[in-house]
Length: 139
Image 1 (tube, rainbow, N blue to C red):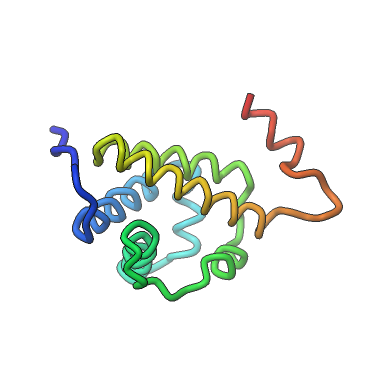
Image 2: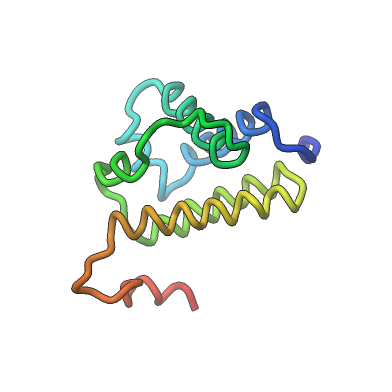
């Protein structure tokens, strides 16, 4: 049974989103191995960081104090096309949980964040951006 759509953004709503999204991540064939390698033990510290991050992004709470680019640059096994899967899963989770306007706001923010991370992790000045092989699945 689908839970009611969340009509107002709050800390509680962000907590529910983060918990549900990462539950889906852990079941995803593509993303689960990357996350399992990066977070081999207790997920709660990561989930709290993500709650703080999305609270800062969506509610301008200022709770997040980290450096997402530095953290993501250290990850092993991440490929550029995995960002499409992450965005699709995140968008699906938001659309399942939130009223359309809130889900759309999350989507815009997530796409900007993903683009920043992709550039930081994969852009090289001597190569075209986006990489030509990454464009194949986008048309």
